[in-house]
Image (cartoon, rainbow, N blue to C red; front, top):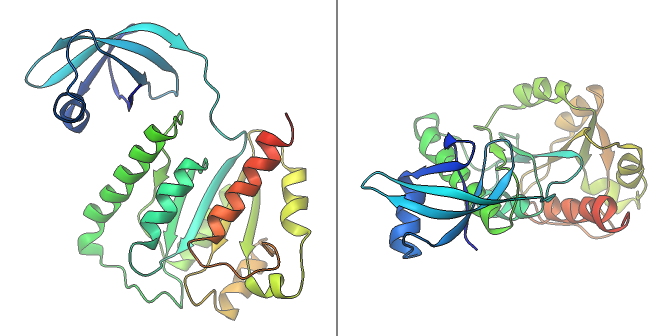
Length: 250
């Protein structure tokens, strides 16, 4: 059943769907009155709904049954990625959303080849947010992750003060065989707490950046014995987090 994140409610038992989602329902899915969809409210609650009315501007769907779904990770994971080349960030956002990321923070690292253009920022972030929304719908998430507009390194450090735990995936730690910091951090975390995971761009983080992160209470961690690409490392970490909190504890 097709899933839609809906911001508008006519009342407690009726959703109002417009814009791109209305177009998707009518032109892509070819739905009509009487067809059923799943609507997700801003608070994360979802319901099986039946299309009751179609106008030139909106689709109105009546709640048939509220669903008891628990698809979110018990901890809030934020992925901070040093701006990579090409469409790698789009890949990280799409797959990271499927794996349960709470928030994404792109940042300009010293070795980032990509130079952020503020003039194009709005459209770029809008595209990223759309990718996250579609991935959240496909994976039956209860919420759509927020994609922040890219920040500089100083702003990332300031933002990091809001988190319970902070880790940096550092390839030198993997080369030296470090295996405990990531695992020990997950074992200490409790439901509702937050974790900021920082990943460098293709060339990795500069030594100066690593020192600054350590001075601001970040711990360095390895992610296994192999060196992972910038677009692979966040997905490895998220899969491990899902296993630890969702599979191992069942």
